[in-house]
Length: 381
Image 1 (cartoon, one colour):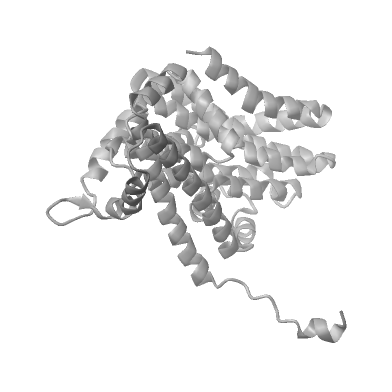
Image 2 (tube, rainbow, N blue to C red):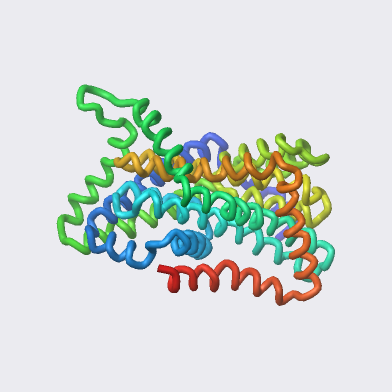
């Protein structure tokens, strides 16, 4: 092709931000429809599903392992926690058992940034920094579970706090007309009722159809929300991080991590952006650390949105448990310098071992995120 011809070729026109923003809203609606379909499908399965679920996962530790394993397999805590909200909202999963599942999902989501660190595997110094930046998120969430799971089992503080907030928030829902119906839930429920009329009443077929449609809607909606939000923010994430926390941010770094994660609807994106920045030496591990903590809190917004589509108040309760777990972990660990530094030192130590013996990486990822939780689900009853 000649130079003149290439010059005459029209420039590629990007999608206008307003169109992307509208598409995000459409996908958000589709996400809520998916949650409602999931809730309907679980409820249609009846007591058999409930009994099977409780028979396979009826212990807090196996629930923790199940939440971790499912999140690793679907590569998204947003999907797994939204599914848990749907199950609790359908009445097939008790809140007490869902609490450790949410904690497990919090640990499972950190594998994405760990895998992102493998891109620097051939460059020793970069890999040391990248692996430490990735695993500091792991160790913070593990430390949070070590502290809060025993407290929760002994006192039920997360469940009680979330139940109290649910009572207050459910009392302030916007309704319309004398029927008191929820506007948003009615809008979300319309396509679900249409689907019900299409599939009819054929027992197991109804359950499977709604489960498949619900999961498909959730995956599709979250994928496109994330993709479009990344395009809308196009490079701004890196600039904001560098500008605001380049010299070490503390509370400001937490706020940045929270804001970015809420905007892009994925803590994995936020933490995965940090890994190459730390690997390249643009940020130090201790500067990036607070951002991951903010991302931890920001990722809970997806479950809160999902709870809007379920009828039972327990759906909102477990979504609030997710938020409170991350908030309490942050408040208990970060203000104390001696405790705050523990995840950083563990991450740095593991990174040194991984540089010295690369097989440590395989053992850590496969053993910690797949084998151990699978054994926990199978062996602990």
